[in-house]
Length: 273
Ligand SMILES: [Ca+2]
Ligand SMILES: [Ca+2]
Ligand SMILES: [Ca+2]
Image (cartoon, rainbow, N blue to C red):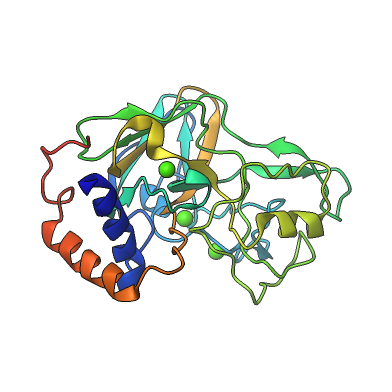
């Protein structure tokens, strides 16, 4: 029971204190085969995913048909390469997270357009096939996320109010990069308007559920690649959906307690149980 309460208060601390939900530090980077400058800067995987790309080249909004591609936005990982990033605030396996998804990885996959330039999703291009995602609470003990590729469904979407999938201007309504797309949503054969509706305000991303790892929370993510090449834009911590009826003050008090304990950040030897 104590674990359950802890999970709740840690997740509340994120929203209560407005902590940055995105990966904060690069721990290790091995570019792998075929990765050259300028796509070899690992800090490009930190911070928020991109909403607008191609500045100075072909400025355009990030949509599931138009992924981020500028070298000051993404970092590439080739065969034999890996990238390890760390979060300042632990990413919690929170039962209040939508669809059980705790972590989102934003890459450079995109939909092939069956009806250019209308934006009808035919298939996915540029997803990883030999990628691997591992997580760790302390940077020492690692566990695999099985059955997940680091780059793939769902391609990134920067704005929720764009009607042109190749828009040259930004939208006015930003999507939420801490909200996963419903994994049950099937994008194929959908029009762009249906895709926007299916994303339901989410910015996309590959959804990771920490439940299978047995870790209550993690602070490290390692993305590796055994073949081909893909790029990473960002990694984010999913925001829990507030439970109606839970008094705000309970969440705040719990968050203060959780911050005081700081069990994962300052106790590297303590492993998730
Ligand atoms: Ca940009
Ligand atoms: Ca979960
Ligand atoms: Ca980025």
